[in-house]
Image 1 (tube, rainbow, N blue to C red):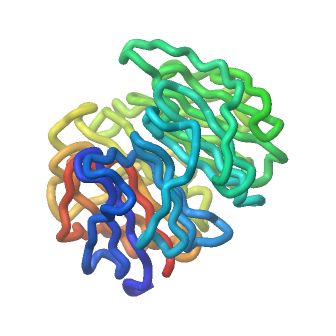
Image 2 (cartoon, rainbow, N blue to C red):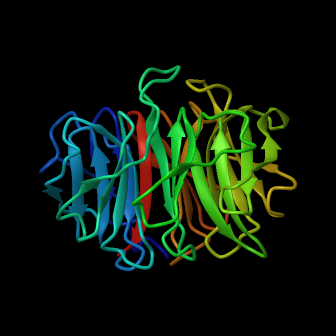
Length: 322
């Protein structure tokens, strides 16, 4: 896409950054974000890619120009940390947000108003307060929504968020980090935990182990992603430990049966944490380390380059065509 796209980086030390030219130049977005905003969630509207949402520790924000300008939305999420945002691909006025303390919220009017939903998520866990780290809306699921909780497993709604059930049979560790959907021969829900990636082909009724990450060069797993045009190409973001010293990117080209380590141009300074993909250019994939390095592949993950710009702790990453 030769630079004609915008990159958005959410940090927990310096708020939100945006590059309108594919990483050549950067601006810190100050208005209307408070100075020490912690931006942990970014979501691009699948129907209108210039519309982007950002979730922070002081509310949810909307941009209509690929992240250059923002407005804060009125919501009941003030005082909560927003960890995840998902937009319904079939109706982009319907938006879900997951928080810590762990609640799920829904808007049916593009963020103008919000409703707290009934998901009965545990309010305490081994790390203190659980957080809704991942949310997905199934584009083929007729109202099926998933929420992944660190640490309380997977929740599913079949009625667009009105009611929820706990569905993590077969997941050995309820410490959910990331989720993705693969639309191959069988629709597959992928879930990443610290030491294992799980897959479900029955919309979360049962899960099977797809990869035990102790078999990877680095055992800690954070995020999982699917190449936008090939359901068999999967990516895993890994590191030596949760707050570790280095990381790797693992790729599978056979739906998770086998994995390979993709070479990076430098040794990462910390675990790899997120991926950013977009259907407008499936070969363009971004990744970040938790401590501020950005990596980019323009060939579907075969080769990677490191972007010059570095940040503080990065918790959210997205790109969108201009």
